[in-house]
Every structure is written in C-alpha cells, then in structure tokens.
Length: 123
Image 1 (cartoon, rainbow, N blue to C red):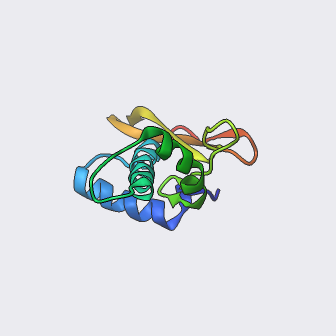
Image 2: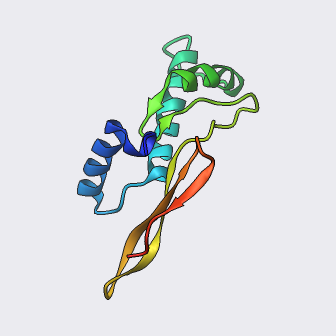
C-alpha cells in the first residue's frame, strides 16, 4: 500500500500512542500532531528576538517551505498552489461488530496515487 499509513514513523508512533492512551491511532491524530509541529517550527523560524512577538502574516509566509521540508507522522506535508495539503493515503475507520463485540474497525483506505478507495472485507 505504501504512503504515510505504512511508514515506520507512523507505525512506531501508533504503537506508542495506543500504549499510552488506550485509544486507536489513526490518520487524523497524526495530522493534528504534524500541524502542531509545523506551527511550532513556523513560530521558531519567524522569531527575531528573545521577546515573543508572533506575527501571523510572517508565519503564513514560511508555511509552504516548512511543509515542503516536513515528513511527519501523516506523511509528507507538501502544500499545493492554493495552500491546501497535497492528498495522501489515509485509512478509513468506523465502528462495527467483531463477533459480538462493538469494535473500532479499519474498513479500508484511500489510495491517492490511484485516486480510489480500497475496501477491506467486513469482519
């Protein structure tokens, strides 16, 4: 399958995340963590002195370059010309019954290179 959802970085963080929180790790959680790291890096790169002075327009100017350089838990965070993230592969999760137990189930994934959804057999 390839992409972010099978990268070593994604898998290792998923193991740590689930062990600490008891919650399932997924694409959206990895995107939130990546967004935080990217914003922190943008603030650091636009600071000009020890005194905090955050200027949003300066941060916005450096975001494309930071995103271009950043491969996070959710994959490469490259932005397109409109400032939107270039599509990446992601898992499709939901809730369903596994036997008689309600469970968090991976139903499939979106393959951005093929521009298609791949569904797994329902357990």
